[in-house]
Length: 245
Ligand code: PEP
Image (cartoon, rainbow, N blue to C red; front, side, top):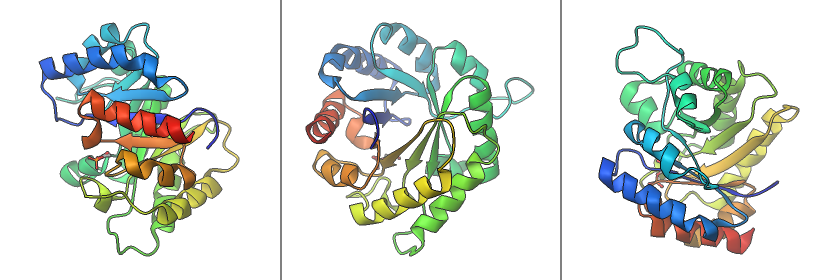
């Protein structure tokens, strides 16, 4: 790991509007406990305008869970990365496994979304991961996905890679650190020489007890779903990261 560890909470569609507002208030109030760790949250789109106010002056950053690959146009129901930037987002997640499966997003679409995000001044969080636990060549599969998505991006763009094995999302336990270490090494090998920052997060059933092993595998932090749907859970994760880092 280089620099401050990074911890992200992806709230998916778990919380209602009022619940998310309460979550963000509590998160802002907890920020003093996050010293030494960079924390971000990805709420659903309608909450982003409120996030701008609720997290103003807080070190906690926020972003969206998706964006379109164009900045404007006839794309009913889609959200422009330019609008996300106007709303003060730092990050945008692209290519989450659920979007790939439920909405047929390919590496090519994810690459276009990542490029649009960069053009709009957002840092893409590019989700990649092999489908099955039995996939022996996880490092190669993930390395190929990373290469495909980063290909059109300027070398100077800062990027977060979220390694999220599909089979470990919503599961009982995270992938084992040895597997994560192999993937991380391959992603670093394939991205060596880029000019921008490249941070790698592990996501998929992260629990506080697994964090020491995951950080030892070489990731720069963790990306958390269910365990971060209450601020108390996110605080526990951050505490575990601080204990190791
Ligand atoms: C995710 O889907 O990005 C994720 C990390 O989910 P969970 O932690 O719930 O497995």
